Length: 102
Image (cartoon, rainbow, N blue to C red; front, side):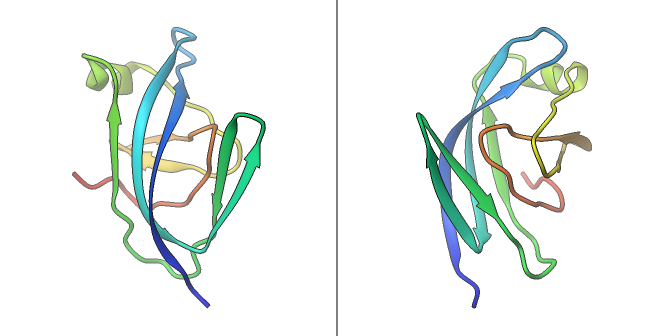
């Protein structure tokens, strides 16, 4: 069985270039969602049964987010996503996505 849901969460991306955390408001449309609450964080782990398009809107709360994505590398726990042709991961929750759509 497959469930679909729209998720809007606030996460923090860690830039290993400057060591700062960038706040990101992320809205995701995906399926098969398991929510786990750990301390102050809500961890969302998703499994996608079929290869299908998932649209993700990611807005970085900074003035020069394009420069940040050019220079900064992001590391993540389990899964990787492709945003602006950069392999990045989001530490507070994990999901699978094919590519970034504007």
